[in-house]
Length: 222
Image (tube, rainbow, N blue to C red; front, side, top):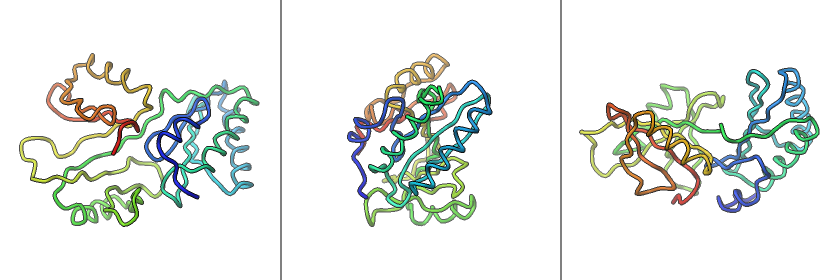
């Protein structure tokens, strides 16, 4: 099973799903918590039948967060899109609304001079495992919670030490069609736009005290 390109995924994903880097996400909204639980149980049975399993989380009052990726490939493949279609049909049968507007991924990013030297410390400290790179034999640039509960940590390669700016920042990955709204909200809340040179891949912002964060999408990435 081969990884699909970002454009292929975005073009072919069912209505209500959005690509966030290496996965597709949506939120199914039900009127009751019980209905959400029954929906999750049905997805579980279908996933076992198909031997392809999404990550699921039930949130009050009746929302189900659904994440699909092919863990063995480290990317989105045809089977993820097929499973998304199955989930979409099931949600429609049960009267749920699929809403991707609140979907996001938060990564903690650290600027370093030697990724291979620094990464093992953080993996050991956090109890994380390596995130499979998108290119074979490439440097492992991220680590993740093996239980899928906490934010990933990503290491940004620097050419020279950073001494005058923060070395830690948050990467907030949002659906591509939500980025402008999120950017506008952050600026209205007192933030500053430091750079849009790499938009639409990411915008660099700072809070009123200069602490940095990036709003990121799948578009225009290297």
